[in-house]
Amino acid sequence: MPEFVDLILPLGERIMAQDFFSNGFYQHTRLSDDARGLVVPERAWSGRDFQICYSLKSVERSEVQTDWPWSVRHCATHHAFDIENVRSTWIVVKGNPILKERITSATSARAPPEFSSYDNIENAFAAALSTHMIIVDWSAENWRWYINFLEDKFREITEGAISTDADIPLSPKETEDVFALGPRTNTQNTNQTRKSRPFPFLSAGHKTDTTTTVAEALPPQQFQQKDEKVTHEMSRIARKTKTETVSMKIITLVTLFFLPGTFIATVISTDIIKWNNGKQKYQPGAMHVYLAVCLPFMAATFIFWAAFQWHERRKEHRQREKAEAEV
Image 1 (cartoon, one colour):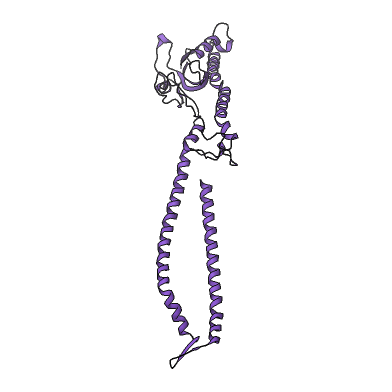
Image 2: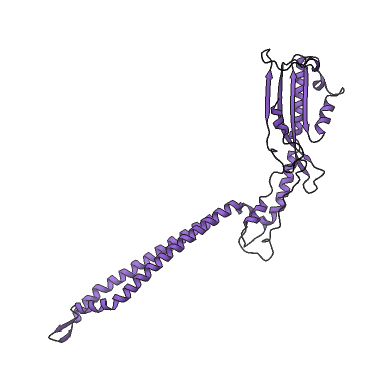
């Protein structure tokens, strides 16, 4: 099957692992005379057969890697079953002989009949399925212990951050160290281990009431996004403050220029002081009316100004809490 080449490409000596996460399953069925394939009597190939090929992965202990004792192994299998000559052809590609030893042991003379009986097509087909189960069983083993090993490694890295109070938040690099522990895969030459550096903020001098946990830590990409949002918000506030400051300066200058003259003109234009034939006459009643009208309006103005200032402070406080929550 040409597709089998795709399954064996991830194998072999490489500097970096490529296509190592790819798996596949392919099948060809040629049971009718019209679909008959290549006929080779010397090899007992009748051309009427069905073929399957697939790739599986498992976890095995590595004797080479001392700091990381587990390695993800790849296996590619091709099987052709000839229904006329009752013959199976196997191609199993793997980096070590563990599957070869298991299949050889299972199909030896002392093996159970379900693995080595080829006296008829039914028994031969059952033996082929039993051989496939050997490969499937190999793929399913050791994953539990590998996951336990990953949990222990992750616990070693994060237990300090979970139990220690810190007044310094996680930086993007420190957060990347926490999340650096991911699935480990390697080929024969890919034995690079990602290591996390110690957390510099977990020292005895950094003790506050604020606890930084791993659950609160964000990946570096999210840290960058939050930082950009905060920077944009601070820039917007700075531009708005600058515009309002310029406007207030202009209003203040105009008010200071006209205020004395306006006050004097207002007092003279009322009946508080009357001028008659060059003589000045003060009217107390007019002063009482002036104060009775002016003072309540002044008080209402100050009350309105205080309410507006209180509303603006509340609005600014809500915006600050929202920005802190996003960070």
